[in-house]
Image 1 (tube, rainbow, N blue to C red):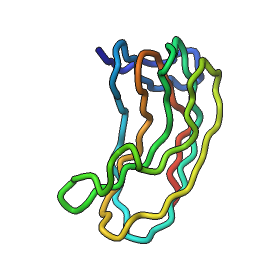
Image 2: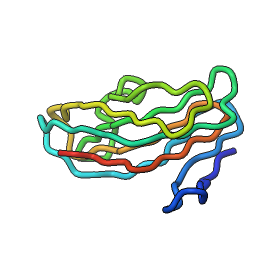
Image 3: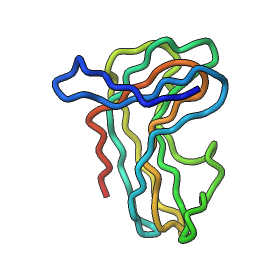
Length: 125
């Protein structure tokens, strides 16, 4: 139901996700962090064919030393929820790594049917 897609109309192709059913799909990268470290995440999102109830966002999901989520994914720090079709829109937010965090999954997430692409994503420590 989900696949990686590319926006090749940009100077540098941009990765994205297409999802065709209810549920959640993430494109993510794991980065080491230290407990108490302040992080800033910024990037641009573009969405298309978002059906009613679907949304997309950037997220930081912190992991413990065993690779397990430190908190419920629904409560992990995230940026704005994009519920409609949008052209490239910048989003950013900050979070502090919890006491037992050793790493963070930097995510672009889609919930429900639609497409999302990401570009210019930066994690600043």
